[in-house]
Amino acid sequence: MKNIYSYTKEDLVSYFLNREEKSFKATQVFEWLYQKRENNVENWSNIKKEIQEQLKEDFSFVMPKIVKREKEKQTEKYLIELNDQEHIEAVLMRQVYGNSVCVSSQVGCNMGCAFCESGRLKKIRNLETYEMVCQILLIEKIIQERISSVVIMGIGEPLDNYENVLRFIKIINDAKGIAIGARHITLSTCGLVPQIKRLMEEPFQINLAISLHASNQDLRSKLMGVNKVYNLTLLMQTIAEYIKKTNRRVTIEYVMLNNVNDRIENAIELANLLKGLNVYVNLIPYNETNHLEFKKSSKNQIMKFYDTLKKNKINVTIRKEFGSNISAACGQLRSKEVEK
Ligand code: SAH
Image (cartoon, rainbow, N blue to C red):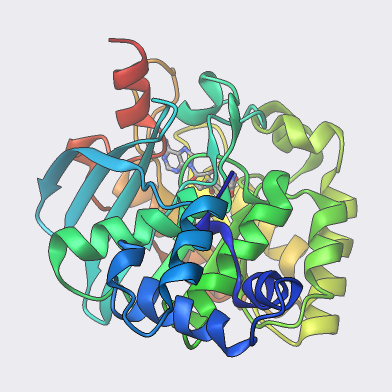
């Protein structure tokens, strides 16, 4: 039985039409779930008793649970237990422009980036759409505030769970759903080329972020297993194609690893790679983890790297560090839980 929070409005329209009911019932269901936030069908006062009964028979309404909450300044990290007792994480970041949530898309990850904690534990399964939708609903409920932007940058590779992630985006973007504007939704990928090509054909205007993290082929292959399948040249061609097709600026993420990819030569190489493309680079201070040998670049080195990109006319920002003391980085909370 499928969970109700996995259904887009279009899915519910076909559900009702198949039962020879009016399609506007789909909108009513969305209003109960996402505007009134009423999880108990019996309280859906404008829905007849027999349809309420049918809905209870056809759908599960069970949500995952928040089992742990850690706070540090403007960051809150949530450990969420799924209905099959697996764990994932979601992070709330209070920004000047509103509340932003980083959602997970898989339990574990198979992409195998050398510096990443999530990859160390391997993928157990994809998240269902409702398990992503509920990350937002649960956090909004606990903080009693709205979330205004979503980044799909938690545990997992979203484009390795394409269908479910797309349905998730449709539900949170729906005006009758959680109503988060497409421009406030960012999907981050390690560079799965066929899925990026698929994404450029989709009819919505979300932001795409690419985890590049290296300025040349050899270095990227050492850091990111995915480069052996879709190499840097192919990825750069695909990014150019994406920008041409969608007319949207793409974010290039570059995690700063001490003495690995943070030399001035790397910055020059990166500038050459990106020259003429409508992109901006987001330099990410590395969040160190106990299990991996990588170290963060010094502030001074990050500044030098930043200046070199600027001098070469590349748009660049440095990511604000959120919650490094509460293991908010990428799978660290979940891995503590798994290893208990
Ligand atoms: N799989 C997707 C999204 C999840 S990872 C992707 O690769 O983009 C989100 C971002 O965090 C990626 O850029 C990833 O490389 C980066 N990251 C992973 N571990 C990190 C760490 N310890 N410190 C800083 N960034 C990290």
